[in-house]
Length: 357
Image 1: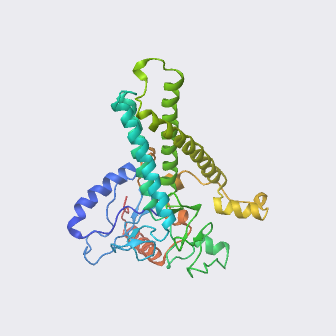
Image 2 (image 1 turned 90 degrees about the vertical axis):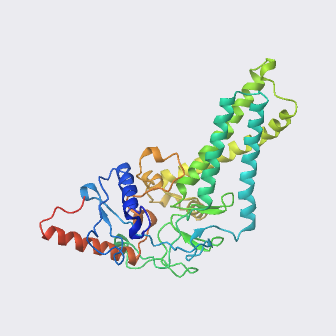
Image 3 (image 1 turned 120 degrees about the horizontal axis):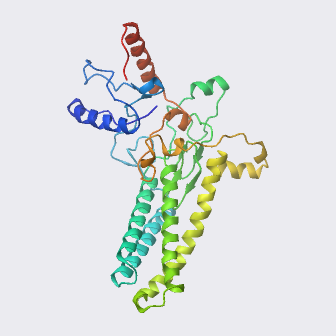
């Protein structure tokens, strides 16, 4: 299932349909024609659409709450963890340090210590890093709703399923309950205090991008400083006497950021290659059961989506080919819409129509 947009009033349908068509073309879908054509839009729910070739359909219905409230509860419309003061301080510290480094490089550019184009590149990298940080912090990591039910494949494999003792809901495989966010999170890797949020199936892409951009910022600035220190003997590339103290402090900051992000990138890469998240890996190591692991590697399309490679470097939400499979659960509401879709498709086929493409 691919969720594209929220259910909108009928007055905005032409504009929404134009946006859907453009988006579908990007994803390789020929058109986003509505199945509810001829039905009163005020009383009709958004119906899934057939994808080109019939492999998938698109569900444009939005089950998320519309409340303008901040929090991690299911009724909150905007995801934000405000209950952890330490996490809030650490997340704010990330912004302060990144801003400090950007200001330092800007001063180097103003004082002609480095070329303007080099300063612009670093500022762009910092902006992308902070954008990915904000997206990771303010994105629902994949919280499991109270209405979650096992998928059909899960019901066939086992008659019994795990339940969360805290949430009192179905607990999908590889999910864990976060005591800080107070929610079960699908494919939870860990709770990151620097993000002030969990890292799960829905925001893993943004977290990886933050690590990559921060690592690039650290490596880029260390390269600039190292070249100036070891290879530049001209007066033209000598740093200003005031800025040089900022550069020294930034050098230690960049070394620490480089080492930390390098270890985190290796940790995330290992998780993708083995299919074992950080929490599960620590549990398996504690019980000495790593050799008994049968998890499959996580494909990149389950992290970055199917929206095209050009969307990978940007902090935009990924579009999954099968949302239920990635999250590990389904909902009765979505299954009901799927049944509506199958009934309408069968009716169209019985009438000799070609279906919706």
